[in-house]
Amino acid sequence: MKFPAFVVMLFFSSLLIAQETPDIKMHSSVLLPGELFNIGTRSIAFKEVISDSRCPAEVTCVWAGEARILLAIYENGKFRENVIVSTTSVNIPLISSAENILLSISGIDLLPYPSTRNKNTKPEYTLQLMLSEKL
Image (cartoon, rainbow, N blue to C red; front, top):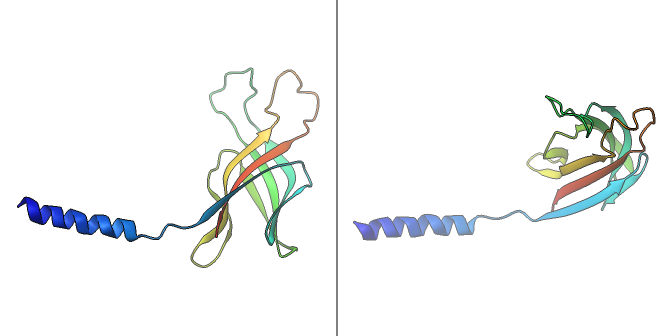
C-alpha cells in the first residue's frame, strides 16, 4: 500500500516542478508631483494627492485612514488613462493584456506622514512606488 501512495506523490510533485513560473521584474522609485517614472515603453506620472485622511502620527485613531493619489499612465509616450490609487491598496493592476496583468503596484507609500505639529502648512509630498512588471 505504501508503494502506490509513494508513486502518486512522486507523480504530483513532478507536476508542480513542471509548472512555469512567470518572470517578474521589480522596479522602485520616489516621485515628486509632476515627475515621471519610466519603465521601458511605459511611464507613470505622479499627478497629485487627491485626499489625505491618514491618522496623524501623534494621535491614536480608530481607523488609520488613507491617502488617494492620482496617477497618469502613458504607453509609448501617449497618454493612456488616469488611475486613482489608495495607500491602503495592494497589488493594484495598472496595465493588463487580455490574459495577464503586465504592470502592477505592489507597494505604495506617501510621505510625509500627517502630523499635528505642522497642520497649517501644505505638505510637499513624495510618492514611493514599488512596481511588478511581468516580462
